[in-house]
Amino acid sequence: MNRSLAALLLLPLLLGACATAPGPATPQTVASVDLARYSGRWHEVARFPQRFQDSSSLRCEEVTATYQPAAGGGLSVLNECVNGLDPARARRHVLGSAYAVEGSNNARLRVTFFWPFYGDYWVLGLDPDYQWAVVGTPDRNYLWILSRSPSLPAPQMEQALAIARAQGFDLSRLIRSAP
Image (tube, rainbow, N blue to C red):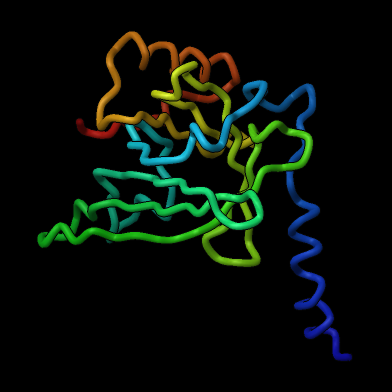
């Protein structure tokens, strides 16, 4: 077997090993997430800028993420946005999937939109009624504040921001979505 084929066959195993385990320097997730209650549509109310949402040709606005139960206990993930730089304001979407990391009580997910590449999705804060959530990654390079409605009332937004701040996220990078 040639080296490039062997590397290609080993890539999924190597990427799977790259999942970040919690430790003393990593953000702490909520104790557990009920994926049935988490399912449904969420609106992004704030985020850290990311190349797949913010570039010279793309500015994602009216961002939503819809999670639905999938076969095998995972979730299907449908992310949608309007490209604010497109005069036609075309709606864009990408479909992915997620699974809970074993032992995390569903608070740490692995998400893919382009198999075999997975990313961390850690639920760092969650309203008891599942009306808002703080989601980030252990390296603190990604952060989203999500709400069941397009805007989040100021007291709840302050709670979400306090959670992100306490977890060591640099909130100067945060951009808020227009309601």
